[in-house]
Length: 267
Length: 271
Image 1: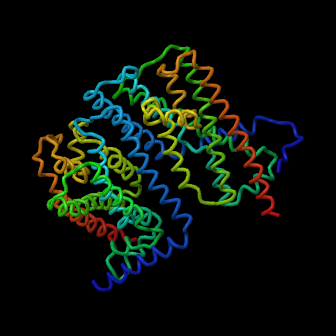
Image 2: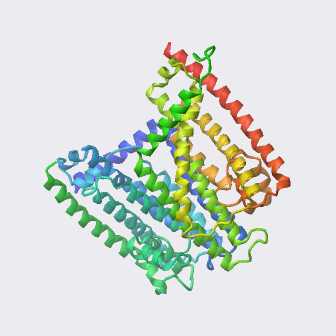
Image 3: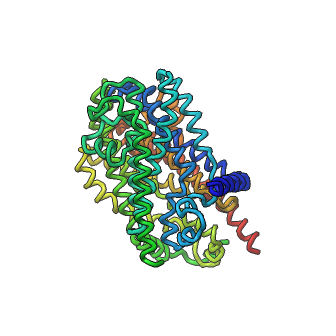
């Protein structure tokens, strides 16, 4: 455990040093993150300027909804984005290097240094703080305790799904299309209240790819909305940490299964 | 730089370049599936979003639900063609240095990039047919009168050329700094938003509208789309085309200047 922490510390040291080395690249990618979220929020603003209510949600509500998703998503992007590269490593044979490392294979795969910097996470936290005050959501003890847990749980949902998709690569080499469609479901469908979708899509986003637990159900609870699209009790919004943990556990089990199979093939 | 100078201009090589680009694109089947898959998902999403918004609010009188759904679907179809970076090959060739040998060939190099890009676009334009058919499962699209359709087609073509010039200029920047993929993605999102590819520009705050409408992004998406849905009436066509053509001339001139400067640089480096 001590070694793992040391390695992890080194990993971040190299990330920061790499980022400092390629400063202009970093600035471009920061602008990229900023403009990506900026255009998404601007589009919401322009739409809700003309149409003030979306199934009872105002722009202020949706700004909070977006912020809650952004924090969980950025948390996963910052710490576990390397999971998305695993299929590529499997494809080009790089993956075998992780198998012979002394530490856990998954740990080795996610601590591959690169130009990783917590810029998106910082941006997400700044935006979220602004969105909380803008949306007039009631900040009480429950909120302060649960929001960090929900962000972590949300990151867990993101992480679990990302790990499962990467694990599928042990069986089917090309998983880009799958990852790509799920990412689109997440990025574009979490912007709006779940209730606007047809029933099949609501169930999909609540129980198959539970992105609704990243932001919609918790936001429904904190903003005291009366309906959540599936007639569930409002308190389901507080289940996010549980769902996130379960999802990571499930994904890790699936990963172990895939790993066993990979070794079995005898690469 | 221009070895073709003096020789008789022949069109055939450029048609071959375009054909080669078409068959190259056709080999990336994965990209074809994802772009159509993504398209269908987006059409579903736009229908749900606009339907929900119109159900709970008073609709703007000049923009009924069927009009905005038509607008957004056509915008997505246009995006299949307009969101392509037709001159990525320039950037790639600058990266691996193969541009140097292109300069030695008896061809006009920018025209070569143009025919290669056009071939790529023609291939993606074919995707419009299956994409349109699939989208009709989710949405109903208004079809305007033939005259309006013709004006839309002309405006779309002008918008395509404007987009080509913008991409070309951006890829020319790679003559100086080699990494531009981040900048390109940023520009795609800005084009989608400020060009009216996501939301009609007439819904933007009035003060902003004045500025946005004269930007080149509006010439790519908004002008053809507003012609299609009839928001720009036939009496406004002359002004709309005029603005598009002005942008096209200006950007083409800019592209030419930056290309000359960049090409000279390659020769200086190459000795």
